[in-house]
Length: 288
Image (cartoon, rainbow, N blue to C red; front, side):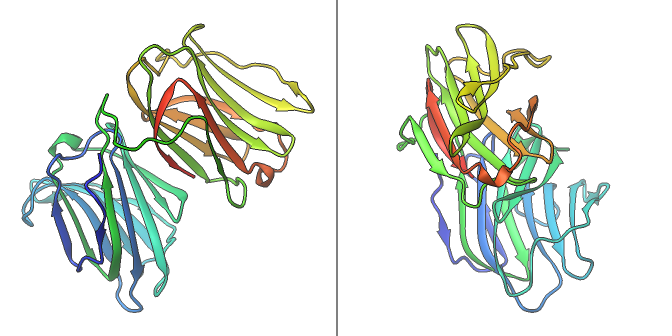
């Protein structure tokens, strides 16, 4: 369910999240950094006043060339987590995507995975989004998908989209959906001309998650061991699947938990240019 986009809001910006946030909530912020100014902040707050707790404080600092993350409880800041990289530039537009899970906040900037911040305050306490500092906002879109709750418009299955520019280390693909009530299988393919670099295939009929590649007109060796937590998909349950392209392998997470790594079998990642999703799922959001 989406709260609907908010266009050109003034800064500082604050909005009450009537339904709060939950596992799978996605916040998309589009704006432009002002030519002058040293900092801006995105705050997931537990109230509207300056005395309320802040569950997640995302704070790019141009005066230090870093991004600082933190939590404020009982009017005291906790230990800073500092990312010594600044993907924002004065005078330039940006897109921030923050995907909420019960474990952490996953942040991408301009469609590239940037950081993860493990929660210190339960997400069910968050009820306010606040943004301030040296930016001009163009659009804020807050999308919250409840468990077993289908939105009005779902993606058509089978689904296919281009991966513009191919893959590269730090690229993240996020898939949000719900397993059908009586599933047999579904799969996610990362394809290139002439083959499949990654075939990720949960099989409910075999209670396995099969990973493979299709190269030179033949399937390779299957990998099918389950994570220690077991089968991480269930009939009728919603999920957030992340495929993170790392230098030597794909890292796959489901609902914030690590599922597997799959070593690259294709030497040139930039040739991987197509995402396909098929099978027994209702597909609600794809971020490439």
